[in-house]
Image 1 (tube, helix red, strand yellow):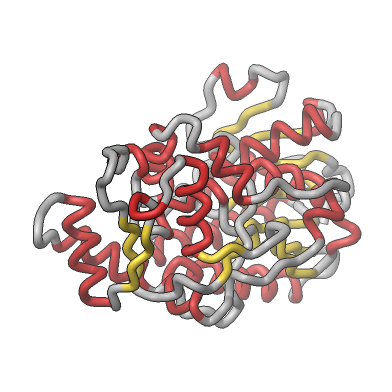
Image 2: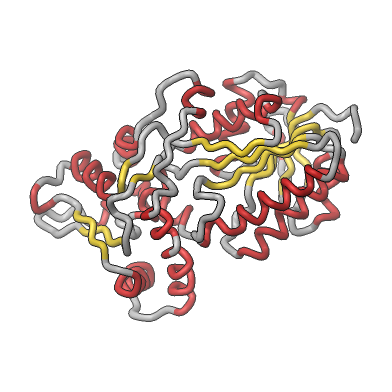
Length: 331
């Protein structure tokens, strides 16, 4: 391993989580821009606006990665933005292998807050990546990892509530229904994405405390899907018969309903395939995989975390933000 490497290299720095990590490194933790490099598929002048070097690095073109990671002691590996399992795992393995060749000594990987033996489809590429990262580090002296199981974003609530859109339910007296297959009463430890970014940034700077560990960054309380619906109703002023109901439909009826909600059609093979994968999230919720509240993030930030209700209040000030949430997470 090279001893001259000293920089922090960020991947995914233009995305939702990675951009908040970068923000907090620069503005909360006062890391000099010269100590940070960004590996991005499409470097642009705006990428280097803060005086940070932006390098071309494409997870699916592994030959570009060693030079993108050069001079970095620490790599933040933000998970590849795709739901295609094999593609995602290949991208992650390419990045890990390139980090080894570049002389990186600590890889911090952003995983997800489901259990390590989860059957949720969204977690499978993370599990495979975690295992590969641990095996890679175990076989090399001086190479370490930290796996951060990032909590479920408060901002992604609409995806879990059957794509419920308050903007389409504004009519007085109109029945407001959020449809889920199961798991409506089990908690989710929702957490604001910006606070995850700040906590992740602090772990990057305090990596010695998290050597070869898997940690969970969660919100400060678990709120069920029914609880989220009740909060939405309260914020929007919907009471009695106008309050949002959460219906548990079971798998098949829920799949039919989601295809129609997303496409306006009774059948759409591509959408149904996506929703069949997404369905596997709900048995995991029902098993309690997401209701684990860990105090680590609150300790890292040194303050009480923003609650789900506070986050919803901000989001629902402009109900158009729900459309942005659905579009961002339902990929």
